[in-house]
Amino acid sequence: MTEKIEEEPVIENDDLLGGCEFESTDDIEVPKSLIDQVIGQEHAVEIIKKAATQRRHVMMIGTPGTGKSMLARAMAELLPKEELQDVLVYHNLEDANNPKIRVLPAGKGKEIVTIQKEEARRRAQARNTLLILIIFSIVIYATLVGQFIWGIIAAAMIFMALKYIMPREDMLVPKLLVSNSDKERAPFTDATGAHAGALLGDVRHDPFQSGGLETPSHERVEAGAIHKSHKGVLFIDEINTLRIESQQQLLTALQEKEYAITGQSERSSGAMVKTDPVPCDFIMVAAGNLDAMAGMHPALRSRIKGYGYEIYMRDTMDDTPENRQKLVRFVAQEVKKDGKIPPFDKSAVAEIIREAKRRTGRKNKLSLILRDLGGLVRVAGDIATAEGAKITTAEHVLRAKSMARSVEQQLADQYLEHRRDYKFFKNEGEEIGRVNGLAVIGDSGVMLPILAEVTPTQSKSEGHVIATGMLQDIAKEAVQNVSAIIKKVTGKDISNKDVHIQFIGTYEGVEGDSASISIATAVVSALEDIPVDQRVAMTGSLSVRGDVLPVGGVTHKIEAAVKAGVKTVIIPKANMDDVLIEEKYKDMVKIIPASTIEDVFEHSLRGIKKERFLDKIKNFASVGIGILDIDKPTVS
Ligand SMILES: Nc1ncnc2c1ncn2[C@@H]1O[C@H](COP(=O)(O)OP(=O)(O)OP(=O)(O)O)[C@@H](O)[C@H]1O
View: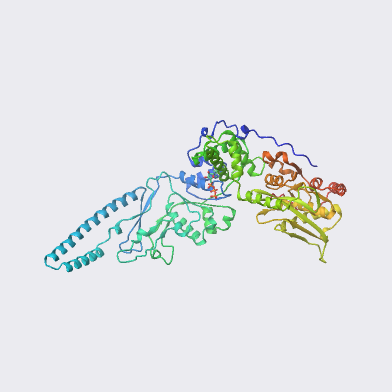
């Protein structure tokens, strides 16, 4: 059974705002602490709070832009600042290559360095005065005895000798390696993509290693991110990109809570120097996507797991009035954070929330990929600013949406333009074995024509599915699924035929497992000689029983079909509530829900043979096919 889509109710702005009353986002209160600003990740917030009190490590896995670094920053805000410490590094009189470390309460380090510097300056002044006096006395004495030249030479030699023998004042001044004076909160260090030196500390190379010109080794010691985040939070995103040795060293630092600093480059004079252990008692917050876990050193992962928490970030939240209200606050937060863009009025905020719904591609959900949504807020605000507007309106947001398109969207549009130029798409007439399939690249849709040809097999044993383009495995699976249905319905065994399938113009990045119903239709059309209506495009997954299963990205796919000039789009019935196409496309397309492959054939096949074929299918449906139930609902 098929049915025409009900006109999607237009959601009023007030509903979209979840009942929030305000004139502009300036009226909305933004929480002071970062942790209270986090939206939609309640589970993560709870764990972060717990981990901060218990000083536990955390690993966050999830899509970029869902607030992982924001949560890590928020965690640093929750840590007590009373515990903060300064770290000083001193020259070691016995072994210059082993600088000494001293740990003091926050603020004391800076005080000591200032005092010592002042003392050193006074000592240097006194020494220089003494030197000048000695030199003058020698020169005057030599002049009096008529040996001026010898006097100058003697003065120069004495000057050099004394300079060499007398201890250098800067040797005695410690270096402030880690400073926490005047810090309002515990340190937060982002070591994402840091090389070994930046992460673990380093000792700089000294080109002048003798002759009184050398820089004292303790002066060349630099703290790493692990030391700077002592008593605070060390955040590393994409943890898997960190070299395995660095991960191992990080693990040691985590276990020991102190880590000596040495030169990281073997050829540098810094490699000779190794300090006493420097404290690094940090909380580690590691982040990444699911791949990150695979690339992570198992011991490091197990350390975090054993001494902390793992969090999986959410990509969406339920579309409830409370959550819509949170998004209203999100817009207010982003406007405030930016500081330069004008506030948003109700219509503009509603448009952002509408976009948050659209971006999920799922019914009753709101997107939590808030960095991207924040980007839209900023572009809309910038457009308003450029116009000199005092307030950002829905019109600015709509313009921002067409300006701030993702690379995938731009690529898809370019692809469409290119295909249209060369008439790759057909959007009218009928053709045997040709179907307008729909696919997604990233967050954008593309129309993907699919051609099928069925020929007697060349092989002696059995027929083959020969697919070209990048979606070969999917094509084979779809043909396998449909072959059972075809066999029952038409009595034809396609296992003794070669089925050729071509995806026209596929390229890297196209996701295609939602092409199953298109492939099935193309194959049936070719096999039975029934033309396909080219004004129709379709998307849907297929079970071996002929059920049409839900897929992802229907909104983007429908919009792509409309852009390609198609008038009717068949989608899985289960996806009907996920359709959130833009207002401007609504009157341009008829959306037909399909729950079985029979529905798909009904709306896409044409010609006189169609009815007979559909009758056969109906019979088959009433009898049932009773074949293996291996279908599993997949969302592509
Ligand atoms: N859950 C959230 N609540 C409020 N704002 C958010 C949330 N998620 C993201 N944002 C906004 O997006 C910005 C970027 O998010 P953030 O850098 O924390 O994402 P991320 O998950 O760490 O991404 P990546 O892994 O790419 O670093 C934040 O500064 C904030 O403005």
